[in-house]
Length: 636
Image (cartoon, rainbow, N blue to C red; front, top):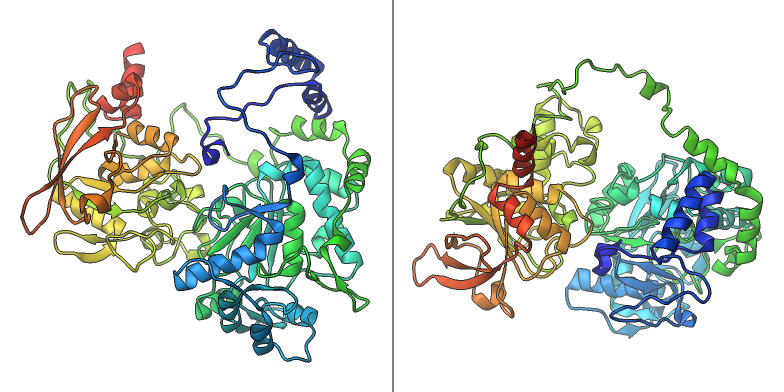
């Protein structure tokens, strides 16, 4: 998570508790002894009275200020206190629907009276509807009206009738190894489920739930604690181990849910224990995504909505007809620690990780190919020979290829993440990648995900800049991988435009705002644009790793002069761009943008963001792949 808070890594001192954890989780004694000896020799071992580290800056945190929190609805760094989550959602909804910023606080009473008959108690309304608002909480009046107006009557596959609206939670997933290898939160989630089931609560029927621990050990200690059954009763069934929903592998929503979302253009939500929630990452039909602890994922599966304050309002109605609140199902720290002591044993780790390379019958039944080189299968839609080395000169070029008469493929705003750029998650049937697979005889049900087909550059090229929430300002009013083909201005997919430019021999560029490429590091966020023909990017600032990846793929990262951007320079993205000849080690580079209608060009000096001597070697050689291949040849 370091890139999200602007660091390369987070370093914590090793202490006696670290050694205890290593021993408890099955590491052999000699390894634990080595860790301690090395850390002590390096001055990295912390104990009472040890020398304090010297930092350039120090921050203080009062633990009394720490409160239960979520992150969302679009970035992992956007923390929201649990008690403010409902109001925060309504503010985001008002901004999303009306585009005029957070709404003023108002009363729920009018919207509640309009939404539900006076004879319906709030708990009954909550159980029967995936949207709406309670009359016992003040909140954002304008957004509440939006929630009320958005309700779409739906009949689910099990025959139950409900109304879905803005704020309906349609996915609640305990997923991703970040949280799901932690016994305290996993057993905490199980205890929440147990207490909820004992009170007669069930997940709301419109919520798709799943459990994907980061380790098989989790399954063993949940079984031992007797918590697997209550989790399964609430729909948190084991679907696998590791990354699922967090990387967009939740699978499709039920058809009736998808139909309601489309009919009402609903801003529905997911709550997951993953570590990233960038736009379009979790599911293409879900506009708001919140990161939470595993126990809170269970809580929101019970509540079924984001516009309910789970800290004060009922999660549902128990078997006794009484409302059940968060405090009724939340375990104490003492209860969690007691379960850890009872259910988690060191032998579990030794058994599980001792068999980690054994594989199951499916793995062991695979035929082992002969030879030491991969035999490319021309009919495969999963793995194809990539074109990175086609036309590669034997020796590293002495200079740099000119960039003249370039067109802009995408004009992007601030905080465009690698999730916006890189192919991830589900493959849309009517997008370029889906059409490619269909043409090759692949049924929609077998599309799988971009992640599973990352070995096929044809699929990945078509999925680059194809995120359903990407807003390309060259095609205002659109979302997804849409652009215009210049000079004519016809609207088309980014992939089709790039291929048309390639046929004409036109190099391409990208214009962007602040923090271009933020989020998790993704190699395809640089590979994809390069294969589409992108030769340069000009942004106000870059995420550090993405900038380096661009250089590594032979894309020139340029930065607008301080205080300047697309708007201040009067750029529209419809210009033809020519870059001055690049010289080795240059810190700035002249850029000239000429409009199709003629007139004086827009000229400015951009900063060259090739920041290290090695990066100059990579870029001069055509990228790190070319550089390394030549190095291997010379060594051989």
